[in-house]
Image (tube, rainbow over all chains, first blue to last red):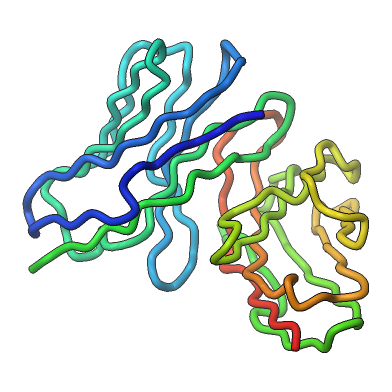
Length: 114
Length: 113
């Protein structure tokens, strides 16, 4: 069974600053995908970024980037130039092999301070 | 393209009743997954349907069931509702294949009294 650990239940960041959310996971798979989703107060889950485990290059999407360390099974999310709209719960989620079922961590609540 | 839609958005049921939730995926998406979100258990995978077949199932009792139609729309059913079934039920769709991005609907908030 997979386990996902998000050790920071809450984080805060000043507007325009940078923040890093951590995630570690455990899997016996060698080929898998990892995702970060955000869930704002509206409760709509929104895909932030995706990383293929076979790729060494870290994924980047505009202000969002990951630091993926496969050997350490670590998958952190860096948000640069934080904006008020970034305030949300952030979930790390590896995808189990064999089907489209995400295994979510407990989430990190990010507050952006104006 | 229209996003994933879920109906109804809010639902109040009494313990012992049954409920059916509906999910319409993004056009062209053939995989539909269902998740339950509660404050205590977090986000948990219920099941996934692909081409009208259940491809994978999470660790939920048999009271939770689902199906998928030929147009990829999916329904989930919960029979003999319990208070603990109160949750936000999220549906997500993705293109054919595995480990692709899943796009979520707004969810159905179920309250069991």
